[in-house]
Image (cartoon, rainbow, N blue to C red):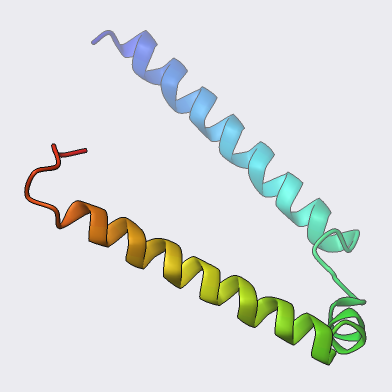
Length: 80
């Protein structure tokens, strides 16, 4: 490879890295990653109804995976 191409690649990658670093620092400084209501929302929506819904969804997910694995164990079925 030519020296000019290597220098251009290093320059572009350095500029992109610096841009990403500056964007990250700006986001941290302006509070873009702060979620002040996370714990409050967790306490507000942690009731019996939500827990029952979560348990029902988990049971459905397990039944689906069990049914899916049962179909795969059939020797007459072609592979996926």
